[in-house]
Image 1 (cartoon, rainbow, N blue to C red):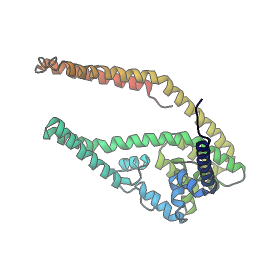
Image 2 (image 1 turned 90 degrees about the vertical axis):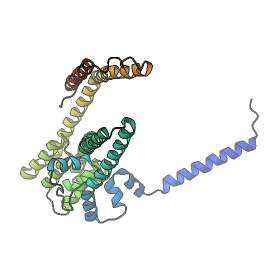
Image 3 (image 1 turned 60 degrees about the vertical axis):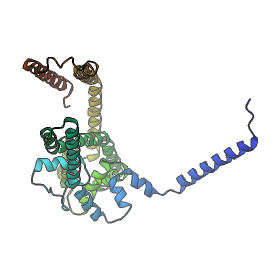
Image 4 (image 1 turned 180 degrees about the vertical axis):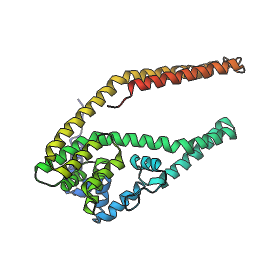
Length: 321
């Protein structure tokens, strides 16, 4: 048995009680503003000012658009990629990041290889391919996040319509309840409707900003209902069910294809890993044959064959639904 002074136990329990009391008071007295700040970018801005028009302009400019919602760059495909990536700060931040990584690539290659030509080549590769690859990665990740939240957004709209609210109010409820990227995107839709855009135009702008595969079904349903009428709540409920089924099917296919992807990664990494291990254990193992052209030709053919195999495995486990 431990001999513990009861006075110390009283001190510990008193301190724990004070901490719990302070935490309870904080949770009780914290306002809804902190929640609004955490949920999405648009609500964070609304907590600082109630001028929705200025917030709409700010959100557009953060995404690389003009204050009126038009594209700013002459290269439309690149501008659309930048827009759909969701990068805040637009082109300015992208240029800064690209220059920083280009300088780092130049310095690292110059130090490791001691070759100005290779350092310049690495810098040019980062300057040309780096922004495209980074934006495509960000766009893919953002579209997956949007797709995971999209069915919940439609459910909120359906419940709001059944409660008797018009479509703009239902869209506003989505903007108030869901996190980014869905929350801010639907908030922009609500603000565009408030400041003069019709519902169909605002929805098509939403698809242009996001580019997610399920959005055309939603935009078409809203556009048809606006022109011909009909029970939009029932249409969107069925659409929500379809989107959820497609999302489940994508996850199921991803799980089934994970074995093939892991096999591809292991088979690709094994020869490269063994090459470096041999180089560390026996540095002269390849030294005696490295000078021959046949060795370089064999390694080039092996690398090309490996790339072809990876492309085939990639096509086998990656397809759209």
